[in-house]
Image (cartoon, rainbow, N blue to C red; front, side, top):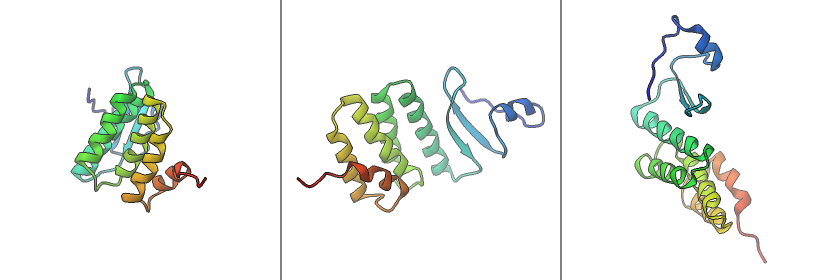
Length: 134
């Protein structure tokens, strides 16, 4: 549920959530726990991608790995050229692994980074899942 808070009218909420700049968009779970943060203005596609990423993080945090994987995949499908797409690629692989318990999913994520987003910090994080030589 979107909520807009005016800074001057509710400084206590700005302080509670550590919002030091506007706009600050928070994706909160039903208990009010922050699951994703967007600070500053973004072009429409980047903003939409960040919102989808936030929904993926929220699903992941509640242990709904199938929904998290679906959200991360949605971002990759609909917003593949955004700055947050590599993060979605990473977390999609982690969610799939958590859902299946199959470590091969992590290796598949590493390989996906070899095809796309290979020169990103998220690819470096996934590099530990590279297959080892026997």
